[in-house]
Amino acid sequence: MQNFIPRFEVATLRPPQTRLIPKFGGLPWGLPAERWPHCRECNMPMALLAQLPHHGPALDFGDSRWVLHLFQCTTAGCSTWSYEEGCNAAFMLPRETVGDGLTQSPQATGERPAYAWITGIAPVEHSMHGELWIIGWQEHEDAIPQHMSPAYFDPHTFDALPEEFRFPHDFDYRLRTKAGALLDGERTR
Figure (tube, rainbow, N blue to C red):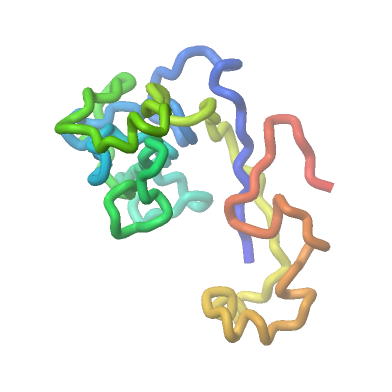
């Protein structure tokens, strides 16, 4: 099966962002301010984890108009591990609703729970520690026959696969998941 390894560059080493690009961290490009999610537990604006526009075949969302947005609360004590608690958010917006320019984080809404202040950790102003831009994709063949691909989505059938198919590429961490990555200039062996 074919997959794509993102090539990253640190955003601070690039000129300022002037358009929608696939990235991790930072501020979202053109996000309508009313769509910025707030944590259900602490009422603070969540941090942007990723903003990923459709970019087939590497990021195939089925339609070129979709932009995936991933957010997570950065307040210590919030239940970010659970998809049911409202401390993280994932949604897609059509490109035509994404505006121009970076969207600044909104102000907190409502009261903050006591633990946000007891821990001494105030929510961060920035989306995450640093910002990485996806500047390209390295195409890669993962050596998994197409007819075996359903086995990778079921733990019982996956465990039954021969080891060379469960752990291809001799445990090379960059190639073990679809989320592996290369920094600009780095080469696979």
